[in-house]
Image (cartoon, rainbow, N blue to C red; front, side):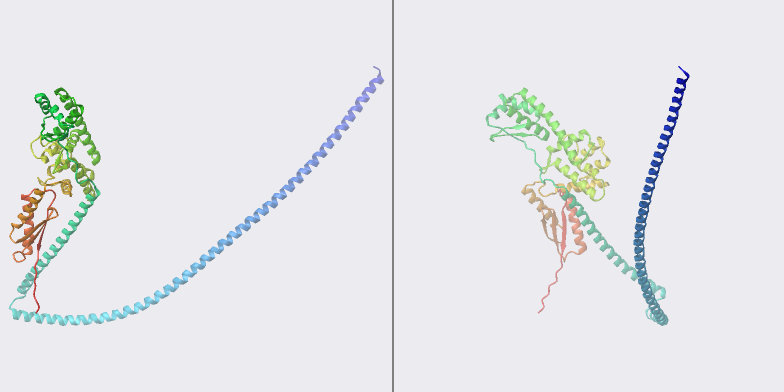
Length: 519
């Protein structure tokens, strides 16, 4: 390459570099100008946005200021209203105080006037007192001279007279209070008993067990007897009852002192008649199965009685004895239903007077438990029941209730009194116990006969099915005190000579009449 070519290349390179430099400077200037214009636009936008936000803030501040001003004015109006109301109240109070002050001034004047009058009266009273003292001294001296008694003797005689008079008045006051207290106690006790009885609603008469078995035809009687009487002998030996087969159509009678045996025999005989296979082996099998079924039924009855009376944790043997009471009756009243009724009534009585209702129900449910074993043990059912309950770990209150519910011993436990009252209520319900007409008439005659034996009694009437006796005494032969004694003696005679359920009310009437004719 020649020098010229080299110079041309160098010149071209330099020219290219110069043009490139100039072009870069121009581009840089253009970029700077665009950036400045963009920056100016951003600044302008920012200024506009700042101005807008400033205006919005000013508006918001003005709105808040106006709102606060409105609230302040509202609060100011409320405070002004309260101030006006307080001013009005203060004005009223000031007026009232002024009126009271005026009234106090008037009362002070009245008090001053009254005090002045009282002072004058006190002076007058003191003057009269001095005069009376002088008169009393003169009168006392005159009395001493007339009676011939000294001061001590006259004082002693006066005190004795006053003491006698006070004793009479004190006795009258005591009698009046005792009578009123007795009436209140009688009314309260009646209310408690009636409330308890009304709260417990039960059937008055329970069902009784039966000792007869129906047969389909008279041919069955021969099958029951068997060849040469072997079937009936096997049946009586297995059950311990007597089977009476007579000419009565369609009926076989089962007789036994033990009600459980009688029930087993009745059920077993009914099963044999239904089954039709009657022979000694079958009889023994049926009787054994029936005894087991009845024992389970008895246990279930006892458990149901405990659940119904809400009495828990009872020994299994006592539960079994309770179930046996289902098959016992007293004057045709079922003993188990009677025991449940006594439990509820005793519990309600206890709750009415603030005692333990659960314990009272337990005492009432188990009070006649001895009747289920009285044919197995010696003694009356209260003693037998007390021994059984003690043996199986019952509480002393329950044992005492069983021993004393017929008042055979001194009652020192309140639950025994409740059980005794509940027992009387249950037994004396109308229709609870059925009696024959002859026995009913005999009891009425006994009541009237006993009352008529007392001196001074004119007439005696038994009313309310023998629950009350009205006695009319002679007003000439008796006084009020002797009439009260006759009433007490009649009650004592009833308690000693008669046996009766519940209680008998005796009312003695004494009347004095004075009749004159005006002509």
